[in-house]
Image 1 (cartoon, helix red, strand yellow):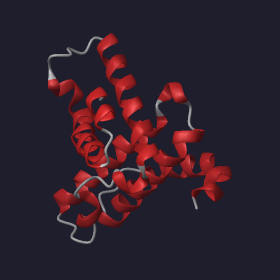
Image 2: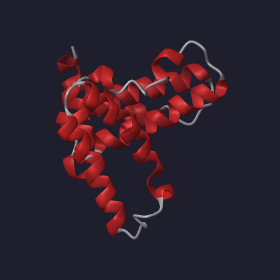
Image 3: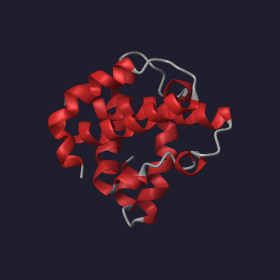
Length: 145
């Protein structure tokens, strides 16, 4: 269970920062999976105003995209839906809240709300979260997002 990783959260964050930008598929896969774990841990341990959970998940999404471009067949099952739903409804709910906060922060920073390019990374997650919410009878949350 993840509760045993709580005391190691800061250590895992430091390790994540040291992994680097290697293009080896094993390293990219490790970085993506560690990003997933850190995103879930950040849901309760991270600094709320920094949206750590969302930041780790966005970095992990980029790594999953890199793996798909590399043609890594060992990880395609986990990259198809960005494995968001596998972490549970509460994680999805928390992530949706952070997406809303990040959207607002970007608009306040000057991003054009009518231009999807500035929000492409967020919209990629929204495209996964909304069907998940609808499938799990959380239509109101899907509409809010």
